[in-house]
Image (cartoon, rainbow over all chains, first blue to last red; front, side, top):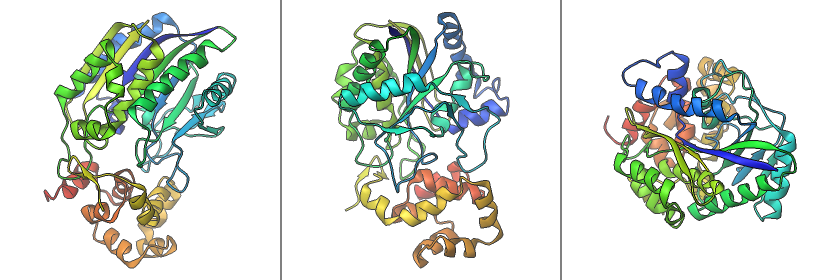
Length: 275
Length: 99
């Protein structure tokens, strides 16, 4: 049987990728972020996962609004890097896991989640910005990406993301072969990319969110999206994807590592949890 | 009616439908070849993208706030910013009315 051996919540942002590619790991503004990923990376090296299951969102790079999935699951053998409009980064394409991906597709549909099943789905900074900070970029660990619409309204509720995490856990437990899986919930934390509050973040709420996600997460699933957006910006609503990771982990977790830094327009959070 | 939260438009289905052509042109800039074609002849590119006169004017004037008022998605507006050399901090400040 497959098991979930860890959960990671992480912000994603194009700027992280730019800083990584430029070698700004030791710049004063960036060092707290890059150093903050090191303990999580070491832990991942120790627990030796066989698969990363990453709940994230596409930012109109793989999909467009002519056909915009609420949930989309990448079951292909390879996930190419999307060009986001300024050229691709020097990163190899990500390996997928069709066997587990199709199992997850079957299980989710049985559990009344109905993702668009994608055999050729490229991934953007929603996956690739933070991943090089957590694992070697020869990508030895396959990835199954699960994209969520958090851009175009109507979008799924926080409760729906929680239930998705519960369904992911059941899917993992029903996989017949041994597989050690780390589930990711990515996005956020608070940021506002346009409008009168452009550039504002909410560091108190970011930290409260990470506190509650660890110890008392279910009430976070009852919060309306409007409240997430009022507290953390219209783009900060991405935070709800962390709930899928947390629900997949089961009731009690042990914190391995946590980091928070907000040098620019986005609150960058990282939370690594074990069962 | 526009739905505004946290000082910003919600990108609703209504807005997505209204700005579909403008957003689609922005999406086309995920191709390096298309970016080059736009840089060579913006007017011809916008014509081929079937933009309305209003939409073309928003792009000509680099009117980021106007694009958001019109209904564009910020994630697509920044692709127009990418091909015209305007990074997010510039676009965001403009949408906030700060410049």
